[in-house]
Amino acid sequence: SSKDEAFSIGPTTSESLERFERDGTVIGPLKKEGKATNGSLMRLAPVPLAFALKPELAIEYGGKSSISTHNSTVAIDACRYMSSLIVGASMGVRKDILLSEFYCPYGDYWNSHRLCPEIEMIARGSFKKKSSSEIRTTMDVTNTLEAALWAFYNTDNFEDGCLLVVNLGDDADTSGAVYGQLAGAYYGRSGIPSHWQSKLFERELIVSYARQLTGLFK
Image 1 (tube, helix red, strand yellow):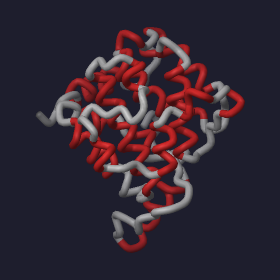
Image 2 (image 1 turned 180 degrees about the vertical axis):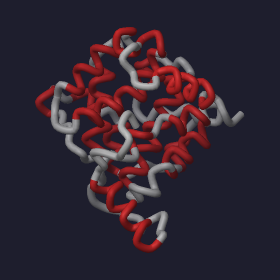
Image 3 (image 1 turned 45 degrees about the vertical axis):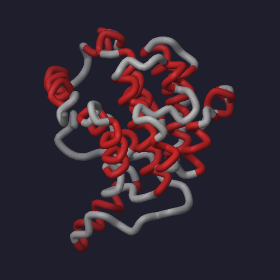
Image 4 (image 1 turned 135 degrees about the vertical axis):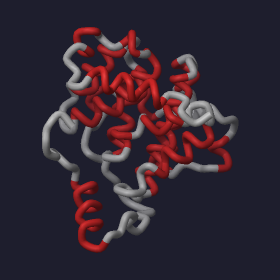
């Protein structure tokens, strides 16, 4: 964090931390239905990057990274699907292929590891058919994922896509973070404006972590 204390903790993460402090429970009960918030999706990238050379594990562990705070089928599947896209982007897959229906860097993985209906709709390309007025950037994980992919689909560089999604408002920082994970993997460090990079807090530390993470597990 750029501050000495935690700030702006989401409701689901706060609830998980309080549960752990209360009784030591790390993983709460699985929520199979209903909406889920976006906290686990916004922190996802290190997992698929670390396992990028093993796409099946990247997807599996990307989903598992959600359960300590967001143990919900929708949140887990959002992380699984985004993990597949981040791995593909890091491999240099073209955007049209990356955003094709049910893209996966590991064969027909989704046939045997189905996504929940909410994320399946996004994987089919729901974001391609919507205008900005139809995109929502609330704390709901499906809205956040769709908004990030919508911005990525409708632009051809990191900066324009980032500005497009954050200027939709609402939970703008999270939407920008989710977009940035995929767009960063796709456009690479050189694609991120240098005047943005120069303002990063602990920039060199972040870069060193990124280098260590990429392909960590071979």
